[in-house]
Image 1 (cartoon, rainbow, N blue to C red):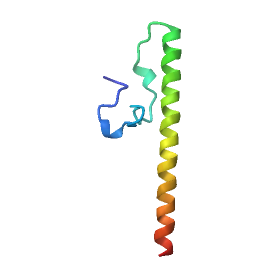
Image 2 (cartoon, one colour):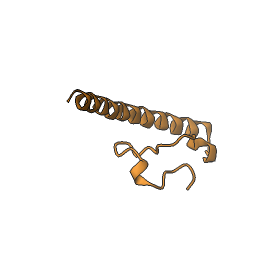
Image 3 (cartoon, rainbow, N blue to C red):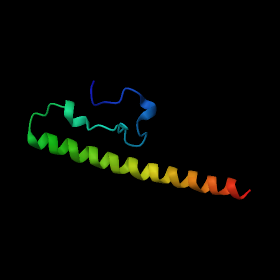
Image 4 (cartoon, helix red, strand yellow):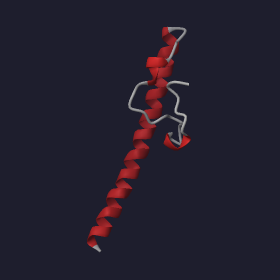
Length: 71
């Protein structure tokens, strides 16, 4: 299905949100404006969670790099 991530390794394990550079809404067929709004709000929430997760991962990598450079 378009807009869904076929590879579970590239999805956020917390939210199931696909990591993608293109909006999934392009290929979606919504029955109503309200349905699209709900979908987009859910996608945004999932992406915010993904962003938090990535920021934590990035901070861990930065700390490890700093440790390695000092040793």
